Image 1: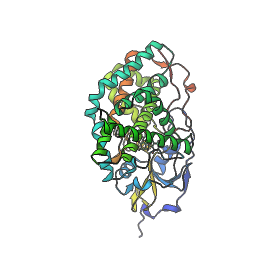
Image 2: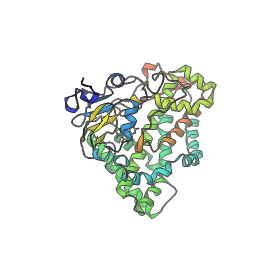
Image 3: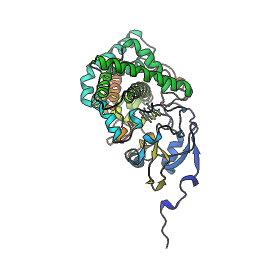
Image 4: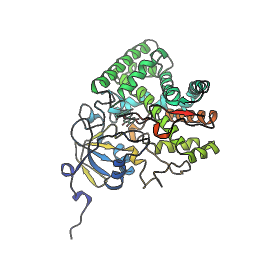
Length: 409
Ligand code: FLV
Ligand code: FLV
């Protein structure tokens, strides 16, 4: 009797390709296509609105971990290839750390890894707390209603990252403008590419200044790596652009999403108010639960034939993983669609997995905890100032978040 294996099914080009059109979703709704694929078609072919050709999309937790941690899936091989994607342009510059593979990746990442270690973040805590306190003071002085995006979520990570990098306050508005243009699917390729190039040139210049006159900041750390020939100026400028813009944009939107999620899940909010020691695990659960982005981010290219979840992926194929769907996989998370601050087992992948795992995870956690703690302490009656349907969400966004978050107390 012949045995059948999953590999006997239709492979590669013979498989149906699903078009994923990237419609704006309401609130923090989970993308219905991701939910369906996770349940029924965990390794599938997709086509996104921009770029060329098709790609694989991997949605289950185990398979996502496997692909993001296996050297046969290359980021370097994506450079210069017009892989099907959500944004018209590539977010990173070619020489940024997320476009390298080990061992080169290890060399580039090592230049900054120590500066982002949990221990260093704890040393930075008082300064970052002061930035948060100043913004929260201003919210109190302003009085209700107030827009938390404008008054807290947007300025806080801009100030925190810029202080860490060593970018002077007079340049923050330019950094802010470049960040919004680089991390957008809606501006068009030319404008986003120009913003990315301008921000890269800004950092190349700042690196030269710090090479001449080092200070106690991250740009000086990057400049030292150039001087000691651990990395090139182009690699360090591109990596600075990635760290700065991603760090601002992800925390800005995700922390607003966290507050929105709390204000629309009153039982969990009450639970947290009643037991403030839950805050760290509440932040982890919010990271798991919130669908951080639309679609998928940066792909990888298979550099050999590899079987994933019983499907043969061919050398040269582009592969995406979804950390969002992995975070809702019922094989790992009981009742995955529930926001539950008492969840005991929460190995979420909100910061990715493998060698490219988010460098700024400790800083992001610290910033999110500070913002939520400050809001809970100061505004015990915090609530939305408008009906929930009137909260407006970023259109054609890569990273999801509210345009404004009007609250009262
Ligand atoms: O840094 C990356 C990133 C950040 C983020 O907030 C969302 C993402 O989808 C990504 C990504 O896909 C790749 C990155 O390097
Ligand atoms: O959203 C994306 C993104 C965010 C980011 O902070 C860094 C990135 O490299 C990316 C990316 O490559 C693709 C995205 O859609």
